[in-house]
Image (cartoon, helix red, strand yellow):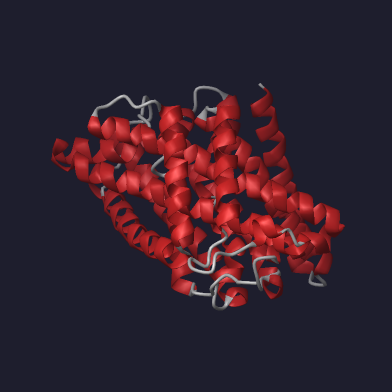
Length: 388
């Protein structure tokens, strides 16, 4: 049987994680977050990033188990047995697929604004998901090269926005409080989506050269880097654009306000490239998760790897269809994001619970227990919001 090709080094994994986090947050949901959190949103960003960093250390604890495409399944099996591992992997596949659902909607929003057109957000999002599935069928190296290039551009752009703080810092705007206390709980639920993405690296263990060392290292470093960038960018956004009525394309708006409309096209193209980049990675992650399940259960339909492309074509097609199905079920971007976050927190709870089960270290046990409690709180509030 043909296997996945091990081509991803540490830098590849780091770029993938950073690009996935940035595209999933600052270009798609940061504006929405500020509309709820107002001037204090930067504090929510810093706090949420710190929480995700704390919880993601569970992957470092379990680095010895990050060996191949079945790593996710094997970790879940340690915690709850074979049947639980099957359920966990299915939920993880759905979670990764929902990222593509959210960001395909954001991608079309940006397209409409850039070209001043009126594409159907829903129908066009389906086309985006299909196109990205086809790109990922071609090969992991080609997809990764695209990801690395776009990520470098993203980092440079956000670094530039961070520098705007020095001449535009607004204490008045940054002290504006949310309109009501409920928003104080809602903001972290949205922002959490902006920090998800690094955890999907565990799904790429089968294509990583040194997964046990590089994956945990890339996860931790990507969260630190993006937390710093996000916090500074959020402060700049609020200072420059104000804390009320921020649009869904705040990065474009910042450059338009600072430099006029001359750079709008370039910044908009970077924004849609960033979002596109994250949809590419989320599709890879969800297909590899399903592929790993197929290998463990010996299901050829989802575990076959194409001899030419070295990619699991059937798994990629199935997960693309799952992303489209989620669009049909939710359609609203914020609700899909919260739906996604509930599954991410469930994943991090299991990772930390497994670490706790295997650990003899008191300090590690304290951290994993705290991570589990935080994850449960997020799930409760997220579920409540979806029900409302």
